[in-house]
Length: 408
Ligand code: PMT
Image (cartoon, rainbow, N blue to C red; front, side, top):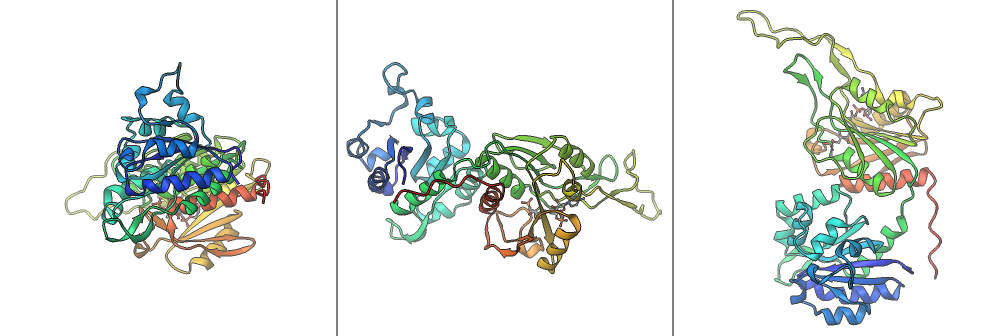
């Protein structure tokens, strides 16, 4: 049930806009209050009057018709909701959201809001599979925007494939799940490590790895979405800092360890960073020069501190939950089970990082969750979905208050 919940429904210009009417009816039947923002293109497919009749509230369409005195300002409109739902979410609106544009009322409220956002994409299959749309969706997921659909099916343009907006019942189910989640980690402190480390050989050269930070950053975002106060300690990555959380940038494993010990006691630590096991024993103070006829210099390595094992050590400051990762190229589960024991952490998220798996730098991941309770195999998922599931499990483990059982 959605009694008392306030939904701001943003209807953009796609043929699926007609389904927004059924969506409103279902939401109101479950006790939600629905307020609509209709884009100019959306008004080509559904009339403000029809939406107004269903919501029993005025329909907002033009930013400049809102005045603080007589109408709700666009900022207030974006805040006076428990959840913003974009249905249909067209390729154009997703692109403007990803770019942070605020050139109409819909994009403005989406940029100004401090509430969760759920998008229900709807577009032609080629638009959905276009690299530009995929990049926009990945950007938005990385900022915590939730998605429902799209479904596969015959499109209005008689093509078949992904791009068809989810059915109103599916969108309602996604809304109920999102709102049921609430912020179970409110008041909890989380530490997440992400990205590679760089171990200097000389002032110019370093040892590193292929970690992009996508998985670690997604986990930091997912924990923040559940209300945790997150400190993200990141090696050098090309992706943007997730909004709304503290980011500490480091280079070497030594710097990463120091940064991890800085925040003081945390409730949960998730070590997703690809930390170099070794560093140069004696980094050169000047660039190593190639000497004609001389043999190449040999590189003596020395061990790096083990951040996960350090955080896992028993003691008054040990987090209640320490989650490590295992990057393996063979014997994944056996190595992960052994790693959990050796490092002393509570859970290990094990993933195959052999080149064929495409885990490093890729958008998707296939993980096994190893804990004292055994080994769980998760399906291949978007890294943001892996992050959302892991954050949910962490919230359960740290004792999320159970939502009141939905009234029958
Ligand atoms: O960043 P992406 O491109 O999204 O790729 C994601 C990922 C593959 C980097 C990520 O999913 C992952 O597997 N991260 C852990 C990589 C790694 O270093 O695994 P490992 O098996 O070598 O280390 C085991 C655990 O010990 C990890 O939690 C690691 O953070 C930690 N460790 C390792 C060495 C060290 N000196 N200190 C550590 O804390």
